[in-house]
Image (cartoon, rainbow, N blue to C red; front, side, top):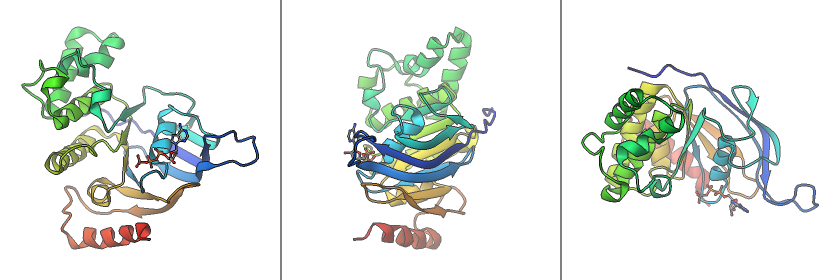
Length: 258
Ligand SMILES: Nc1ncnc2c1ncn2[C@@H]1O[C@H](COP(=O)(O)OP(=O)(O)OP(=O)(O)O)[C@@H](O)[C@H]1O
C-alpha cells in the first residue's frame, strides 16, 4: 500500500532572513537572496558548513520562523505559519518524543489529536512502525530505546500524520556510523514508497550524495545563499565507492576547501 502522491512544490524567491531590525541601517543577513524551486516528490539535500543558515532556511519553510523579505511558497500559497502539509524531523529525537508515552502512543499522537478512530489509528501505526523496523517494540517507552530506535519512532510519527513534505534537520547526525547507514537506506526506501517531498539538511557530503536527487550547496555565512545545485542522476541504493560518486564528492568538496 502506498500513500497517494501529493504534488507539493516549494518556491523560494529572493528570500532573506535577518535577526535584526531590517528597517534599521546596519542589517546583518543570515541568508540573503535565496532562490530555489523544489518539485513535488523530490528528494532535495541542502548541504553547507556549520552556521551557514541551513536550519534557518528549513525553519522558515516549516513556518516556525518568519522571513525578513522575499517569497516563500508551498503549493503556490505563501508560508505564514506551520501547516499539516509540512513536518519536521529533528536531530535529537529526545526533545520531540513524549517520554510518558509508548512507541505506539507516540506514533499515534497526532492521529489522536486529529480524532482519527482507534481502529484506523492502529492500522496506520502498524504500517509505519513496521516501515521503520520497530515491530515488537510497540509497548516500550523512549527511555528503553537506543538513539537509532528513538529516531525511527520520530520518523514513524511524522509519517503517520501523512505530511506531503518532510523537513529533516540533520536527522541522523547524532547516530553512530552503522545505524546512520541503515537509516539512510531506509529513508530512501520510505521516500520511494510514500512519494513525499523531502528537504534534508546535512553538512556531510557523503550523506548528501547517498540521498539527494539534487544537492544545493549553501555558501558560508553571513549573507549565505545557494550557490550551486548538483543533479545526481544515479540510481538507488547508491554505492559511495563508485567512480561517479567519488568524482562528485571531489567536485562538491572543492566548494568547502579554504
Ligand atoms: N534566534 C537567533 N537569533 C540570532 N541569530 C541566530 C538565531 N538563530 C540562528 N542564528 C544565527 O544564524 C546563523 C545560522 O544558523 P543556523 O542554525 O541556521 O545554521 P546551520 O547551517 O543550520 O548550522 P549547523 O549546521 O551548525 O546546525 C548562525 O550564525 C546563528 O548564530
